[in-house]
Image (cartoon, rainbow, N blue to C red):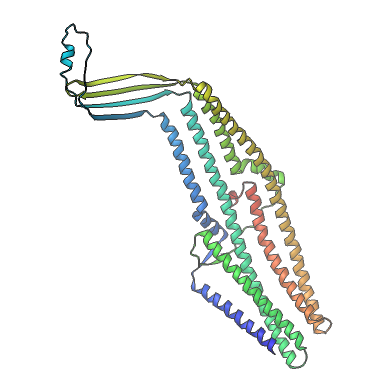
Length: 447
């Protein structure tokens, strides 16, 4: 009697928790989302993509900075100086011997001057042009990085949506099984009262009902956590209940060959294109390093004005000319810069080869993963038929006292498990197919 009361207490406690959780969820807002809605929201609110948008802005600013190198430099400087009582001796060619004596009478206590210079680069060993070219390559690489990250965000949204679907379906299936189990308990209880069923068999059935209730509690908890994770991913309020509309999920396209997907990857993978642009930037870096071997030529002009009270006044001093600058130290200092630039190019080449190998592996892995998912669906579908038929046969034998209660309960559990497995396999196949599309660089074109 004590054992039965304990089981009943567990029943009441678990049901109360489940009812309370449903009441809490009922208090929150609900939103119905298709898979496309979820993908769009995840892209809109992705922190990673916002970070990459900032990186793109930074790269664009770097391009503009490189272009600004073609603009003239304009500098203005000026000073006002207070002086002590200096000895001023002006040396002149005058034959008069009074120049020295007269100069000693000059009193200088301050000085004021201003200088304006403008310099326009004419030639710098192509350093500016190569700098612009390199900055543009890196800008394109960052944009492609963002697109590649966008693929990852889309796949993550699909995985989260599928996980929410699996967890909600698990709750529904376990609830359905729990109702059947409780009905069986009621029937068994009537049989036990009429002396047609051993009390031990009734307790076994009630124990299984308790286990199903615990399973329902776990499934509900997983569903709530999956719902919270989805809300965070989509930028929705944390307590929003998401209702899924799966009616518009299209069936996967016919599967191509691995070779076809590998060819698509070479044309569409954003990370491969980004690395190609970085390789070009590294090649341009070699040209930038070599430009140090050449002189810089610039057109320059300026204006000078000065006023030293009691001594000197300069106005309208305008100058214009061409300046040539060449650093002799570049003959031995540029070699190290050139070696560094060539080493970066070799790194990009190695990274490109490693990525190419990795892409081939990713496509093969995703391809086999999808085939495995399809095979699981087929096997689990067959297992459902087998488990259903097995339960019917076992129930018939049980009604004729040919099998034990334990065998009947085991058949019921097997039936529930195959249904859960089949649902999960179908959902996982959707993720596996989209992972294959991502590996081939086709994910966004199929959304």
